[in-house]
Length: 126
Image (cartoon, rainbow, N blue to C red):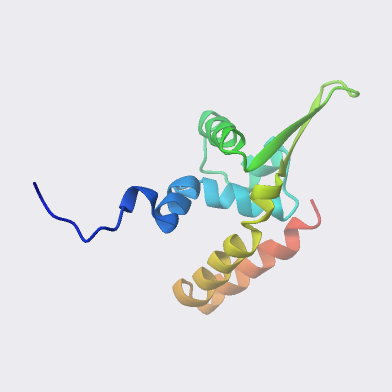
Protein backbone atom coordinates (compact mmCIF):
# COMPACT_ATOMS: atom_id res chain seq x y z
CA UNK A 1 0.00 0.00 0.00
CA UNK A 2 1.33 3.39 -0.98
CA UNK A 3 1.62 6.06 1.68
CA UNK A 4 0.34 9.54 0.99
CA UNK A 5 0.90 12.82 2.73
CA UNK A 6 -2.65 12.69 4.04
CA UNK A 7 -4.00 15.29 1.61
CA UNK A 8 -7.14 14.07 -0.10
CA UNK A 9 -6.92 15.45 -3.63
CA UNK A 10 -10.47 14.25 -4.35
CA UNK A 11 -11.88 16.69 -1.82
CA UNK A 12 -9.47 19.54 -2.58
CA UNK A 13 -11.45 22.79 -3.02
CA UNK A 14 -9.15 23.95 -5.83
CA UNK A 15 -9.59 20.69 -7.73
CA UNK A 16 -13.34 20.63 -7.19
CA UNK A 17 -13.69 24.24 -8.39
CA UNK A 18 -11.58 23.62 -11.49
CA UNK A 19 -13.60 20.46 -12.21
CA UNK A 20 -16.85 22.43 -11.89
CA UNK A 21 -15.87 25.15 -14.39
CA UNK A 22 -13.37 23.22 -16.48
CA UNK A 23 -13.45 22.67 -20.18
CA UNK A 24 -12.99 24.81 -23.21
CA UNK A 25 -16.37 26.51 -23.09
CA UNK A 26 -17.81 26.66 -19.56
CA UNK A 27 -15.67 29.55 -18.26
CA UNK A 28 -16.39 31.52 -21.44
CA UNK A 29 -20.12 30.83 -21.19
CA UNK A 30 -20.14 31.93 -17.54
CA UNK A 31 -18.15 35.04 -18.44
CA UNK A 32 -20.56 36.01 -21.22
CA UNK A 33 -23.70 35.34 -19.18
CA UNK A 34 -22.41 37.39 -16.27
CA UNK A 35 -21.84 40.29 -18.67
CA UNK A 36 -25.33 40.22 -20.15
CA UNK A 37 -24.97 37.83 -23.08
CA UNK A 38 -27.73 35.49 -21.94
CA UNK A 39 -29.61 34.24 -25.01
CA UNK A 40 -28.63 31.09 -26.90
CA UNK A 41 -28.17 32.87 -30.22
CA UNK A 42 -26.13 35.67 -28.65
CA UNK A 43 -23.88 33.16 -26.90
CA UNK A 44 -23.35 31.26 -30.13
CA UNK A 45 -22.59 34.48 -32.00
CA UNK A 46 -19.89 35.41 -29.46
CA UNK A 47 -18.43 31.88 -29.69
CA UNK A 48 -18.60 31.05 -33.41
CA UNK A 49 -16.38 27.95 -33.04
CA UNK A 50 -18.81 26.16 -30.71
CA UNK A 51 -21.42 23.89 -32.27
CA UNK A 52 -25.10 24.16 -31.34
CA UNK A 53 -24.94 20.68 -29.84
CA UNK A 54 -21.93 21.43 -27.64
CA UNK A 55 -23.35 24.79 -26.51
CA UNK A 56 -26.60 23.05 -25.56
CA UNK A 57 -24.68 20.36 -23.62
CA UNK A 58 -22.53 22.93 -21.82
CA UNK A 59 -25.55 25.04 -20.84
CA UNK A 60 -27.33 21.93 -19.54
CA UNK A 61 -24.24 20.95 -17.51
CA UNK A 62 -23.96 24.43 -16.01
CA UNK A 63 -27.66 24.33 -15.14
CA UNK A 64 -27.33 20.84 -13.59
CA UNK A 65 -24.34 22.06 -11.58
CA UNK A 66 -26.45 24.88 -10.18
CA UNK A 67 -24.46 27.71 -11.77
CA UNK A 68 -27.10 29.02 -14.18
CA UNK A 69 -30.87 29.08 -14.50
CA UNK A 70 -32.79 28.60 -17.73
CA UNK A 71 -35.71 31.01 -17.90
CA UNK A 72 -38.26 30.16 -20.59
CA UNK A 73 -40.67 32.97 -21.43
CA UNK A 74 -43.64 31.62 -23.32
CA UNK A 75 -45.48 34.93 -23.53
CA UNK A 76 -43.97 35.46 -26.98
CA UNK A 77 -43.94 33.24 -30.01
CA UNK A 78 -41.49 31.75 -30.50
CA UNK A 79 -40.72 31.33 -26.82
CA UNK A 80 -37.69 33.16 -25.48
CA UNK A 81 -35.03 31.44 -23.38
CA UNK A 82 -32.72 33.43 -21.13
CA UNK A 83 -29.82 32.13 -19.07
CA UNK A 84 -28.94 33.80 -15.78
CA UNK A 85 -26.45 33.08 -13.06
CA UNK A 86 -27.74 31.51 -9.86
CA UNK A 87 -26.45 32.81 -6.53
CA UNK A 88 -23.71 30.17 -6.73
CA UNK A 89 -22.89 31.27 -10.27
CA UNK A 90 -22.84 34.91 -9.16
CA UNK A 91 -20.36 34.01 -6.44
CA UNK A 92 -17.92 32.98 -9.22
CA UNK A 93 -18.20 36.35 -10.96
CA UNK A 94 -15.06 37.93 -9.44
CA UNK A 95 -13.03 34.77 -10.14
CA UNK A 96 -14.13 34.57 -13.78
CA UNK A 97 -13.41 38.30 -14.27
CA UNK A 98 -9.97 37.85 -12.69
CA UNK A 99 -9.22 34.99 -15.07
CA UNK A 100 -10.18 37.28 -17.99
CA UNK A 101 -8.01 40.13 -16.68
CA UNK A 102 -5.06 37.85 -15.95
CA UNK A 103 -5.27 36.23 -19.38
CA UNK A 104 -5.49 39.61 -21.11
CA UNK A 105 -2.54 41.00 -19.16
CA UNK A 106 -0.28 37.95 -19.32
CA UNK A 107 -1.15 35.98 -22.43
CA UNK A 108 -2.16 38.53 -25.04
CA UNK A 109 -0.15 41.05 -27.01
CA UNK A 110 -1.19 44.70 -26.86
CA UNK A 111 -3.41 44.53 -29.97
CA UNK A 112 -5.18 41.41 -28.69
CA UNK A 113 -5.61 43.05 -25.26
CA UNK A 114 -7.40 45.99 -26.84
CA UNK A 115 -9.60 43.65 -28.88
CA UNK A 116 -10.51 41.61 -25.78
CA UNK A 117 -11.33 44.73 -23.79
CA UNK A 118 -13.45 46.12 -26.64
CA UNK A 119 -15.40 42.87 -26.60
CA UNK A 120 -16.45 43.81 -23.08
CA UNK A 121 -17.76 47.16 -24.29
CA UNK A 122 -19.57 45.58 -27.24
CA UNK A 123 -21.36 43.11 -24.96
CA UNK A 124 -23.38 45.79 -23.22
CA UNK A 125 -24.83 46.85 -26.57
CA UNK A 126 -26.35 43.45 -27.50
